[in-house]
Length: 331
Length: 302
Image 1 (cartoon, one colour):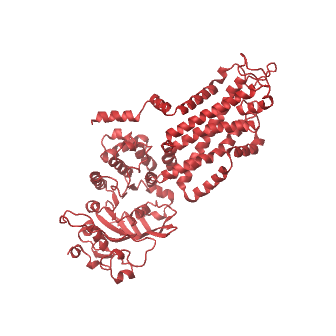
Image 2 (cartoon, one colour):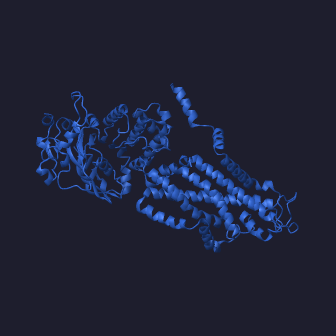
Image 3 (cartoon, chains in turn green, yellow):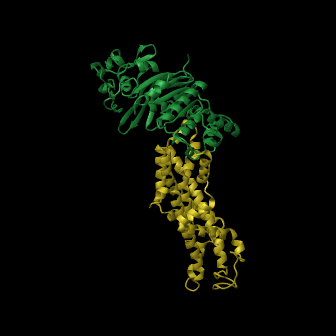
């Protein structure tokens, strides 16, 4: 199967006065058409930067993509001109942001937000764009779309704004949608609605999606495949099933043990991941999770573990991966 | 709550009537309302000047020189026998034309440059702001004087002098507005919807003009209203110094300049244009301050 997006050894660095921040340190993954891929990790592990790198929206300076390639639909995004890149943004790749409250322009009506994207990328008349905007609002389940079109963002609730953001991302029928923490700013009941909607729409329209989140619950339910990131690298990758039921990296294991589960016994304490994430300006040759790892050995300080297959479609970067597992630690 | 009532509530909140808005403004800003009345009077004066007087502002009349204020000439006449009331009325045309043109053009150019500078940031912003620093290092009047002196040789007729005055006043106003607008735009640059616009593939021009400019309208409008009074005063100063509008075009500053010789014997020649300038600038400044207070919640407590 041909891949829609292939990221190969992508390295994004920020050149700051405090040193070079290796925000994304050689990540490789791909997304098939129609597939939903989750990127999980804690704050500052480079998951948002890796997504912004795909759209080449890293603020430069201080940020720079120093190495790697991003192939999207047969085109190398890193070698495109700025004008060609603008054509891709919004038309072939849609983006949904974290903050629905501030991601819509407060002085434009909902209608203008939607039609502007259409007019920029597709050769449509004002009437056609308007009709499409109405259709999009219906698609994302906004009630009274006729009235909403004329309203401004401050008239809408957070959930509705996020629906409008989704409508904007879908406007030009993109092949890929990047959702950067799409539900973090919403309350829990709305989170579920929005995620259901996104899953529904991607299925129905055959759109691939990269969903960036720190919420493992989101991943379990909505992603086909999961990439776990730590300190700018992908440290484990596999199907949602594999990651959940058979994690093969100590970090993934620790993450899973830090969230409440229904099958836990009552009163059982959650295990937080001890310690702080490493300073990305001072990474050494060894595994960067080593200081917080319960499985660390001599070897971990010597060299970074490579991503190796554990089983079909499941890879992990850990020297001790054969010892890591849910059963062993639970015992 | 039923749908009908929410809709009605929204209606009421969204569209307070123009009259009630004006009433609120008048109650909260009594001084500003006084300023607004002066501004409106001056505008009416400028528009209806020909209907308010029977005289020609530029025609000399040698049998009515230095007439003290009387029934025929309510403000008296000057050394060329011209009716001072007529010249004050027509002078408001020059003053307001220069004032509004300079304020609007200066603020608008400053707006685009300021937002652009903030949007592109980095080296563009740095170079740009240093150039602005150089311009702002000179007092407005000195900059305007310098520009007028440089361009004076290009003036072909007294009527064209107005346009050179406009250029001389507009240029030094630009950096003032650009600086203020930039600071607002820098804050807006960091709000995610600008990134969202970039992620939507919009061009830089479109993001600047459609997404950032409308969001810095408040400082822009404040600058315009503040600049009108300033520009009127500058025009009067330049004309008074002999570098602004040239005779016989009616202009208050110029009238004051010519009145210098006669101030002891025929004081009315100096008094009326002086009153016109003072009242006008005072009115525009009061109005400008009130607009600033009304549009900028951050300044309200000060």
